Length: 333
Image (cartoon, rainbow, N blue to C red; front, side, top):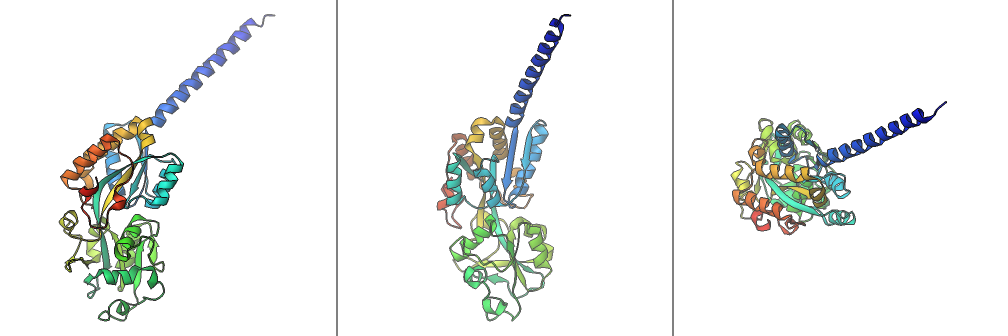
């Protein structure tokens, strides 16, 4: 009896399995390099979703995943190395930078659009037509927890009715930005309000409660303006302004509640995954087409040019942490 044929068959089987395993590993590696992952702010999410869908039409093999777990959630995943791009409605915090550094993750900070935070009231509200920053501070500051509970405590001219508040959750960029703008400190917001990561739920809350007040990204107001009153905000110059028309945001008239929206792109992903650079290039070249239609405000033309140049240089780090609410975006690109 000869064992040679059996040996040859076993050797051939092992060889085939080795080749198949190598090909599988190679294909898996190639597939990984073609994947792009984005997670972060609900504000700005529709832009990324629209860009990803359009990108996929020309690149059917591309695998771009877009999610929205809030700015804080996006940065947590980003600085842990779990995603390639974080969408943010505020600048990255010092503690988030330290976490990124601990994982050797550098980032490129790219403004992609503008947003105005809309202060909203119930449609039946006829008295809160314009609020000062001092009044907004009294409403939203941490020192008002359990104390400022009725409208007449905000302004004696307002009715003695219970003040019901709706706002984004405390780990969102929208919460941070408004709190910083009206109280001077990002972590100085009150906690006794109804929070949600879903701003459509905030719209529902305000539209269903006559004496409620809330705030959302401008797109959520525009989509639901027949249900709401848009409250004006008194600017530092003493004039009452609103984020609509959107020229008030572009020209920085709606101060201090206008803000840029960002992409934070992992430098490691750019260096190791060609698909990430290709996708971000496409994003910067094309996102302006959808910004207005999904309810945000396009950057000035000059800003788009500068952002593209910045990305081309691969410039890492943040400049916008130095920006104060209401400063022109072009000062920091």
